[in-house]
Image 1 (cartoon, rainbow, N blue to C red):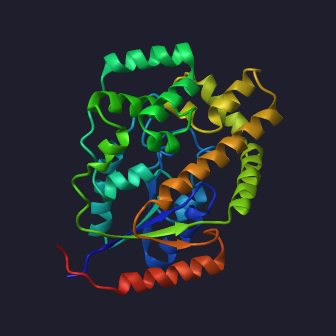
Image 2: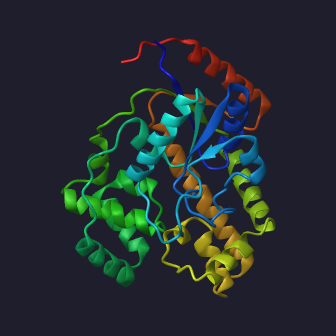
Image 3: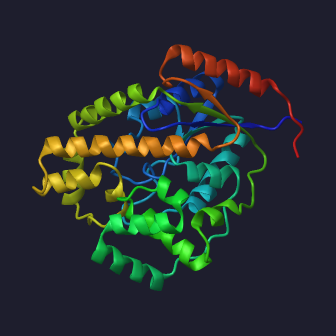
Length: 316
């Protein structure tokens, strides 16, 4: 009996994962399973590059707009939701096409999630006080001393992830990377095929800069203005996402727009670099050099995928 395939498309932000995923889904009878920690929040749309209404009507998307801004979400919670979606797709004989922006979520789903300590409000209170006293850069340096691998993939402005990584390390008595490496409950019932996009760095950075400008022109500042008008506090997790905090400061008169745009572009380039480092370590990825919206690359990827899907494996 052949095992159903789960396709995972990985790569840095702006590499064209969504474009490639859409083409694969259209041609092979698939649906998109979004694997992104930013797109689960309602109202935070432009800066997280959510698919348009037309794209969602063309190909069904899952695991978008799950939460309100004040709600918390973890890799473990993503795994639970994703398993439900995969069961439905398997029942309907649809190919799951997972577009991966958050590598930890993918690993939690496919490889199983580690048995991490539960949240400790006492530890979090101390960490919040340290952050308020010393700033996020200080906390990031502290994480680097505890776990340089975790610090390499978590940005200094991503306060929730930063605090959680330090919290886990303190409670477990070992680096968070070691905790996450002790995996369990691997995904069953699917055979994962991983395709990676790796555009030339210069071209990727140029696209990031253009895309930031396009986001601004599509109304990103107005989106942030509407979110703040709703009373969403600056401490809400989505305001730690790249661009949202910077634009909020701009709207509060703390930063001129050109400097704000430049800061967003720089932060996005750094994020892309961290993603490349993370995904390069992912085993079993078939890499394609270029962007996912390149017709030649997508044709090559479809050919490879067809060959891989043609292999029949016996279900465990």
